Picture (tube, each protein chain N blue to C red):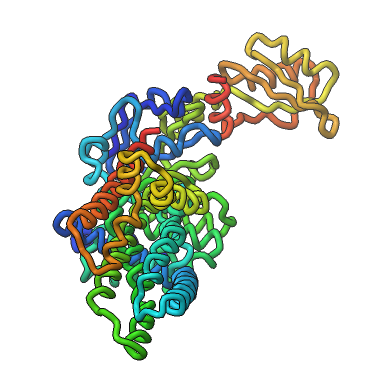
Length: 307
Length: 258
């Protein structure tokens, strides 16, 4: 559905995005993650055709963004970082205007506006002035304008930024509902969002695509299964554990209730060896736990390796 | 939050498009008119414009003793030079600042439809301002015997002035993200076309003088105030209007690439 090939964007001498390539298939929800200023918004703007790429090519729904921008515009629904609202207009007037410029046939407009308002939870709000809405409701109107023409591709730039937790859950539920029938690309710097919604993530930092992988794949990069939390009581436990041939690096994390807590890195599970050591030396064991890498760690590992 | 769109909905939301994007221009036009009239802006302009018209009308009639609108109309043209950029300043500058420009440029709206819709909306607002001054010819008719032909051509001249100034204002608005800068910039763009006339009066060199006179918009509106419509003046206003629309179009296109 979306095909980005070696795309570079320069602003004067500044390179915002460099050599980015990725593909997104029909019906996928892909998370675009990266620190602020990584090039997420620039990339999304290029996919929608708002910004022309300096180099490379982009195709959406089989249409080249540069050669056939109008077909791309018709196929895409786009929620920019700030919901693009006219503060003076009412929700109803605004959505009617969007339906019109999004080529919803005149006879369907009223019905369609009513439908999307219901879908994003704005029933009965037609006459509210956009300028008076809270952030959460602005975001809902922003989503409503992005889907009013029932696009095949949805590009959402930080759809939940600045919302309260209940609103975040609401918007995420809605995005999940849209999935399956549509291709969705959403950018965020909140990793739990990617875990909640996406099966795949693109990690971007300093304008470069650092990873394009499933969430499991990303966690594996952070060393999932290779780290263990061990708590032992006894004299010289840290030195004794570090001396084991099965154990790689040991990081002491301090003493808790008389137990020495440490994080152990090892290529293979060292817990039976540590247990044998404890029995031999008379150490007390309180915990031996395999640590699951979080997406945060995966992200920091990937972004950190580049920096 | 309810169910996602059914496939039935997907098919009924069919793609239809008017010929050459006229429907889009109409949609933009309606949106702009709505924005003008839900905000106090249009009413404030109407108030200021009518006040100035009344002042010029009174001065013109009391000083000349003629049942004529000549003084009022040329002065109004100069007032429009300063006011119209304030009407057009929002168009692109405000859309850029609020992020709605991104909305318009990612919707299937051809750029020319956007320009046409915005231009037509501002010009319509001007026509409404001009209609508001209709009370002055009525007063003349009540107390005297004005030349209706001259009054009609004067209004045609003012209308052409509006068309031209709106274009220049749109151009200025396309250059910046700041509406106030766009408004003042619009005045700056228009000022040379006024000052050229004053400068021509001070210059002896005949060629330069003729050139300056041709640049000055008062040279081209004056005949309308005398009841004369010439092709040369019509062409001047048409060139001015389309010239600045073209520059606006170029300016928006080129800014995308920066």
